[in-house]
Amino acid sequence: MKVIYNIDEFKPTKPIVLTQGTFDGVHFGHKKILKQVVEQAIQIGGESVLLTFYPHPRLVLYPDENELKLLTTIEEKVELVGDLGIDYLIIMPFTKELSRLKSSDFVRDILVEKLHVSKLIIGYDHRFGRNREGGLAEMKMYAETYKFSLQEIPAQDIEESIVSSTKIRKALLAGQIEIANEYLGKLYTISGKVEEGLQRGTTIGYPTANVRVDSSYKLIPKNGVYAVWVYIGENRMPGMLNIGFNPTFEDKKWSVEVHIFDFSENIYHKEISISFLAFTREEQTFEGIEALKKQLNKDEKEIRGLLTD
Image 1: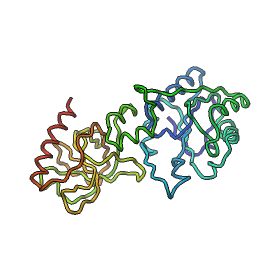
Image 2: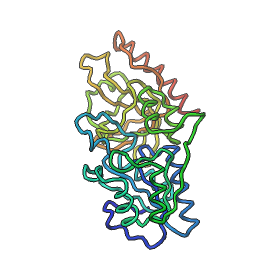
Image 3: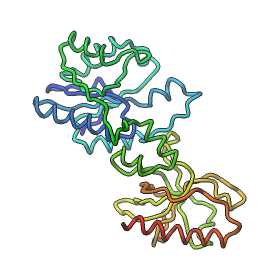
Image 4: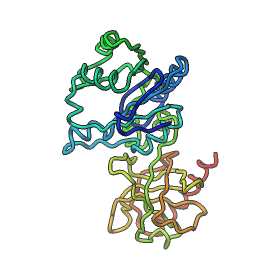
């Protein structure tokens, strides 16, 4: 897959089958659309293209009042899309000027003149143009005007629930990891560098890696304890993760801390990734260190079982 950051550098030589959108999370529904794009491109001897935008439009339009958290960083999105067989990922800078472009101008200037679309595949609820004024009906009209074909992908259901990035975000914030993972079609993952902490875990037999998540816009699941897989380079290791304020201790500083089972290497300042398998309990305040250690022993036993099933 070729990643293009400047749309003017895109010079296609074959018919283009394209879809567009933010595709946050690259979830189950997104994958079905992208699969259609790849298959249709192969059928016509063309090339498959995903046009996406960065930063997320809401972060540009409402910078001072926006609490949006994203399922994927741009780097994660590139990796996920690359695994699906797309030929070109075009990452178009989203600006206020672009947001003011009328739907008709967007189709003419971007899709037709710059991207040379032959076939456009979009989801049932796709919106585009200034104030999201354009929808499927308008796109059908533009397709006829500019002589490209249009295919709609209907709502994708999982047990009668429409898959959406919003529903996945809500599931993660509620600790419903299994639901989020089902919608995503993979384990939800965060990444970051390991920072030096207060070393409290080491003193009680559970040393932890304090993780500073790479992006301030990346969604962190609800506070609590989780069964996780930890990736350092090519190595995958089981672990238990705590997100929260460590209420048993006085400083109560919010953190993301992971204890990697049967692991003792120094990984300060290294980049690690953490994939969530299950939420196991709420964060608790314990009467003292011994009560905390007793609970951690229970957590470890339960989580080891989850990660070996």
